Image (cartoon, rainbow, N blue to C red; front, side, top):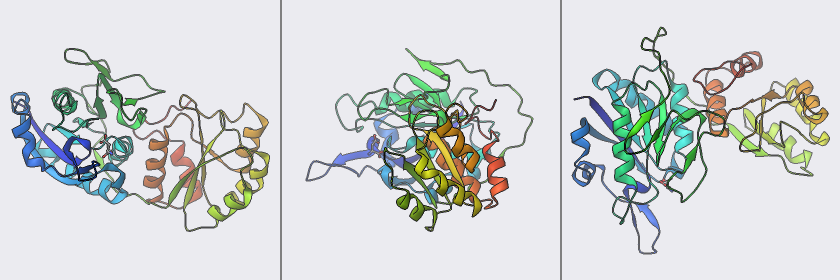
Length: 328
Ligand code: ASP
């Protein structure tokens, strides 16, 4: 039997209702094997609690701790299952994709929409499917949820209640779950590159949505704040109001990186397409191409923890580290 490390981080799986009826983390991860005894029929499972939080309370520091925990356990296990709240699961899965590269083993994230203690909870089936995927040859950080197996660094939460809560809008699914999980992605048997652990994130990044009539003074305040970079989510394929262009130019001159994403769920940047995008590109904005917001944010934090040099930052955004971006 394969040895699988189950790392419990909290989320709805282990929540119960408090006096006000609101779901709150209460459950001890020690109960997991008792509540879902079939886990041990699939693999030799060891459960560890990393934290027990609503995933709204996850932080870059906890991403680092989780990555370091996996690094320490890496040689002792054949795969990892991370039980995590759905709200920020795509952020943590993306962060881990940058922190641990050239994987040779699966790191599978899952969680649930309903607590394990509720009738018809989706927690047992999601956890069982995640374990089954973790025993396969899937050297990747994935999200297994509902009927989908997705690449973590390409995924976003798309529903707060559907059992298929995640999608990877611009990337093929890794697999599907019918009566059992089917992995379609083909992973080369031999990895040439050595596994790399680099678990540091600079939290000084903000994500800002452009709106019609966006006040450039507010944008200027952000550029002059204690932030080290901004992600600007823009219209269509990277289109930005004329009023922000001089601030983008000023940011470039002072070595302050601005990454551009599309606000469209299925959108990617194509900044040569319209003059309103092209002039931002000329002013020094960096195109984020088809990265999800979660991947772009964690990549930005991961890069900034290693360098503040604008040339190196620009180069890093033109590099595909973990399958997060399509370069062409
Ligand atoms: N608020 C919960 C969390 O992200 C939602 C969930 O787990 O589904 O921790």
